[in-house]
Length: 289
Image 1: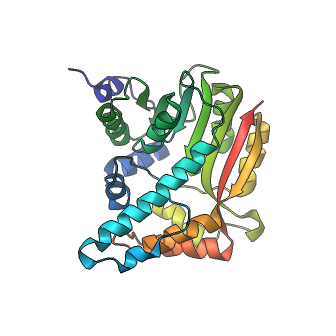
Image 2: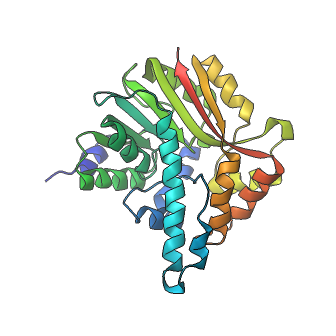
């Protein structure tokens, strides 16, 4: 029997740049417990951070289950972030097609399908992520509507005007925004919605802070200034309708993560950058005109 993952893997691989290959190699090898153990809570594997107030009582739980309580709380916060993004996708009908660009292990795509019943295409440059995500869709019995592909978000090959909504969840820092938003303007129907949740450096701070540079080195990315998002959206027929500063809302997640067994060492850089004002965590929703 041919699985969805096998069918997706049969397509010819895109011609990635040397930088893209290095990023793909990173994510192909990545098995970070902060992503995997949280996803094991309920099968929604996310590759992003969390928002909302923390239930700090988990730190006082019985020693034998304390770690599980902390992990469940971190997962609750990242699920709240995924739901918040989905809240901004607009009116999506079951027959609509949406794009999860930079899909990771597929959690956000599954959230969108569960909420709207829509068709979802997820794309990643990591073969490992694509195979994992397709297996999750098949396991949930939604692989007729949720499919994952090995594709370059800058040049997807999908049909013009084929998507009602597109989102990036913490993945725009890996690409050039002028090229990215030009592709999204092509892919979205007129009136379609684009949403991103992203970390960006604060233009008023000046150049990227030491902490932002540390984050860049850790994730092999290049965090953009806030202004670039709005300039390139304006250049590509994407008009912001909602901008939400989630910086204060994500700090508790990082404070809890720093106290967990899943801490990776990058937590202090995030907390310092958020608190000194050099780094911001934003949701931007825009309509294609």
